[in-house]
Image 1: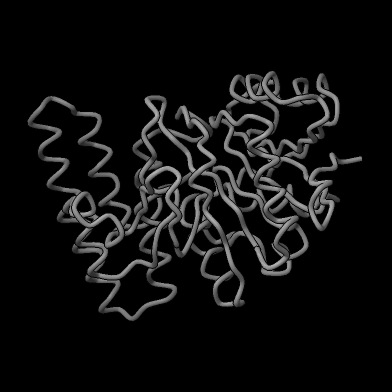
Image 2 (image 1 turned 180 degrees about the vertical axis):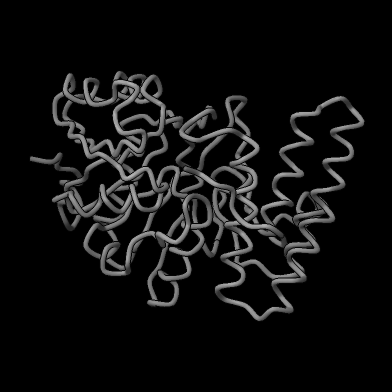
Length: 305
């Protein structure tokens, strides 16, 4: 039986946390320690049990294990949703640090407003600063230039990614899947996350599906959840290349070739400038990550096998 919430609301909804892991057993263990045992969790393990996640899951009540296909976040997250029987699935990154009442707040929003198709929390860095990219807007050439050259600092709603002010409402076209609650049947009815994306931009694509269906979403800027970093993922340069490849693949799915080229050029110029600055300051690793992102924009995804 999944947890019941929102008794004071017009509807009572059950929810289940969907936790996609990849060589992140320690982070999952830390999250289990923070969540009460009556919070139901499904762990979709993309590392196929090599780091002891099955044993960890077996040790916690109300927790089930699904072996992921090792084919990326979107496919694993969808598997968690498809195998659930809860009214709401609540996607969490293993490296987020939510309090139970914060998860309740997201589910209660869906219970109180049947017109809502998604509610996300705002993730913050360990120092309390809101992360850039908790949501954002559809990519255009103009927005890509604003993002690439750091002009979003002056024009915070003119770039690609949002960094909202806490407690100030903001409207975005998509929201991060780091802490995201969705009605399960509706989510699956819209096709779930686009599995053509191994990782990154599946949340942007879902936001588009949601809007095209005439549905609403809400970014809760008053629900601030720490995101410590260092969660599921592979070698950093490969992940940066994947980030660039996923971005341009999404743009190409919905725009003419002229827009794809313009976005590529804008993001490449800005990112290569950052790479040069990082290299000059002795940050060789960061410079390599920036260059990998540009490689993804032009050469596509790395081999993730």
